Image (cartoon, rainbow, N blue to C red; front, side, top):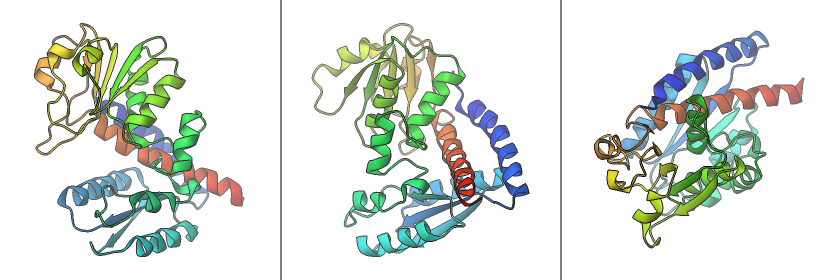
Length: 278
């Protein structure tokens, strides 16, 4: 089992030390989280991220906006945070209400504070392998593979999902690490057969227990990046456990490392911004 909490705990030790150094310089890393509406799952995620920040010594600000907030009003709030020198990272909790232009809101975030890796510019920098803050869940996946010494170079990685903040960026990151990558999606023909060819399978499709054990090549590494109602991932864990050589659980797999990565990026942003002003 690829235990993500073990990875997150290792990261926490490193981050706590870095925060201590910054505080000696009079700098407290600060993450601002924007929540639009009152979706219970989003509220839970925001609370978890705030608690994780507190445990490491990172300050967190929660901006809560009503569900009827317009795109223009949301962008105004983001602009205020962009201009606030005490804020080092900005997270817009996804999803936002349907009437909001989510892409416009994401792209209003300053690239220096895009610690979640959601802007169009951030996506492009990630594709070139030069992003300061790659998308957090894809970065978490790579972190887990590296932590457990899972070889990437030369392997066939099958990614199920093509979202701009998960499937597409993790495909680019794996390609940059010299994997051969197949990105699948809802229109993919013969999906099961393609997944069977994967040395590394990353499930990010948003459907509970979607990937079955019969799809997994013996010895493949399975990363479940899905999170569905009831703490259920995109992988049918019980059936995939036997054929795989390594697998992430849900919960306790990619999730803790994603949150740790977000905080790590915020600390890095604080350090980078302090160097600019010193």
